[in-house]
Image (tube, rainbow, N blue to C red):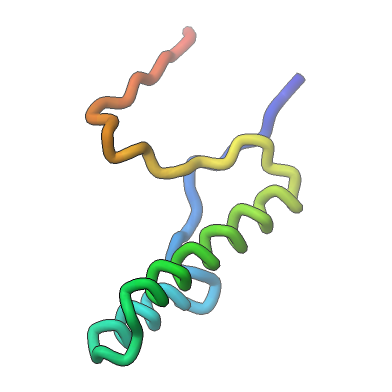
Length: 75
């Protein structure tokens, strides 16, 4: 069985929603909680879009507690 994966995807949003939210946050018109929610909504939307397209393995950011990443390569 072959699984489909992607190495990554843009996390800024299709219409740069996260960038715009960060800029509004800088002006003081958006709270940190609202900024986090905007980023979370973009992530959920991206993951849903990938899943709908048949991607089996969707990357995620490593846990902050992990300082190293182990990669196994097979010849």
